[in-house]
Amino acid sequence: MRMRLLMLCAGIMLVLTACNRGAVSDVQVDPSGGVDATISLTEQEVNDAVVDALSKQTNPLLRNPKVDLQAGRIVINGEHERRDGQGIVSGSVTVTITVQNGGLLAQVSQANIEGWDATDARIAEFNQQLVAVFNRRANRDNGQLTFKALTITDTNLSFTINVKRA
Image 1 (spheres, helix red, strand yellow):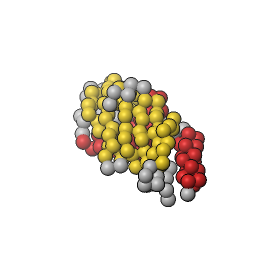
Image 2: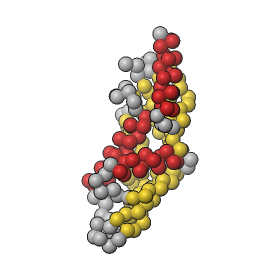
Image 3: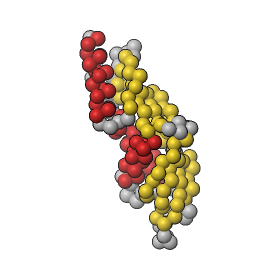
Image 4: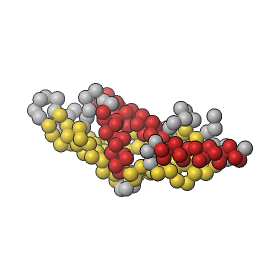
């Protein structure tokens, strides 16, 4: 039993590291038989996730995004192609991400883009895409993973996950 758990821990660390899922640390067996692990993503890795999320939108809110991690939030700066055909303008979006009921919740808390009307549908789509990207980066066990905690500092985004045995 203990050997299986140790192999599961080692397997999780190898899979996450091999799949470029950030630095894995603090791996521990939890009382219910699962494994807790903390994964840290650098600012560049978060930027890659944001690029991925924006690329999944039919008409991306921002192009050429650059992420600036700040305590408790992600500020995304980029270019916005105005819908009225009046060219490209600079803009920024501030996103907060929290853990709720074992999943992630992303929310745009501020949008500053000239000539852009912040509709709920566009914001909801971006929020969903961003959560989906982080879930894909962390979850290779199809529903066996839950998020326990998330911290954003000026240098990285860290989340603690729990993986249950199948």
